[in-house]
Image (cartoon, rainbow, N blue to C red):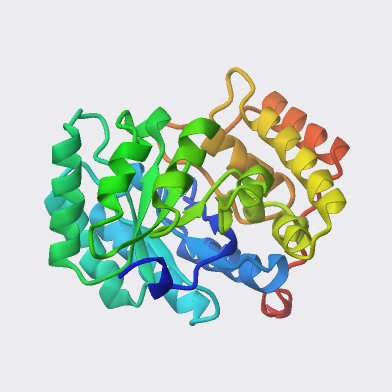
Length: 307
């Protein structure tokens, strides 16, 4: 396999996993959000159980359930690439095989986090998954959370593994991002950095915006594709302003995304401990800031309205 084995491009959403007040997975809320992201926001792909999906707070069985629900709700309308990363290689293989059996179009695998394997260990980790499960693999580089960085030199090696076809580049280091495109863009579909990424060769981005925002969450890619850089820049400016509010001191990013969803009537639900919801002051302040930026939620799916 290589990047030509899949047709992944455009604006994808990193889906949240809603929990109820007791900490249980709220599958109905999750399915509703998947439907809204597809039918009214117009995303081109779905990523359940990534970082925003709080995969690290779920058991393997819960992750399998969420991934299966995503595939069922998507019903083949857009690709589903499930987050199956874990510290233990055996867990990644188990989750990846389950995702394949559920009908996922691919899996997204973050480098083993917390521990600090060598570059050779990381290559062997991905190779073992590729050897065990015949499914397209998207690498996931997020060293701010995983500790281990997928540098361009390392990605150059990983791109030669048979089932590796793409990478979500979330290093927040544009030099690393561009270096990845230079060394592996001929073999991998590179996602990341919204408009700046598209302008240097990325095929799309995987973002949280579609969880709470309206059609503009996907419009940036369409504007760029149509050559309307003025409109693309306008949306990019709003996107960056939104991100600033999610990252304010004292706010956890994943909690803030769910708060934004709830504020605009989307099914964000609760985070799972140890993360706690924003207090009332922070919640109201975030909502007011987003309203000032002109953020509005997408229309509910017709099916949801009928219910």
